[in-house]
Image 1 (cartoon, rainbow, N blue to C red):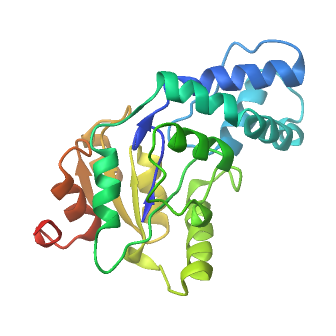
Image 2 (image 1 turned 60 degrees about the horizontal axis):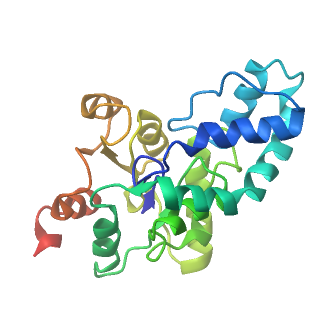
Length: 233
């Protein structure tokens, strides 16, 4: 199963916009007034639009440099999130409960963050213990979120020698774009209304199950497995 990071497992304390502005300043020697919308999108898409909005010519040629600078700043991001961020209610318990399921469930992330920033945020809040981050998929890979599902499946197949096609892959996220990525790849979609979009928006996007948050661990397990109350017994 693949967890989204921001506003599904954690709130990074508003670090995203400030980090983008700092990287932009370092790369271009001036400030930018706007950062592109981030919810449910990958860093490649966000960076390209942010640069375009700021009037940078041929934004695509600067995306890799921007990603490299985001990664370089991961240690300071970790310190910021440790001081100002928080694990969302129920997130730690949900991760631990899924880790206890039998047969075992492989847990990783599918996130718009680049690997270094995802790891920094999760480690800062102690949410990385049950996650195999090596088989996750990250926002440096592609602009389209659904493409990350294919990458995560390929990595998991190589690591575990098992297939994860169709509903054997479960995506948990807080935006309609998370849901769309699941539907486009035949995965099971679990929406969590802890970000900006409301539960009704996640349901309208086609989520198989929508939860208000992760505080009801039994409901989380039921939503992930699709097996009714059995996982809670």
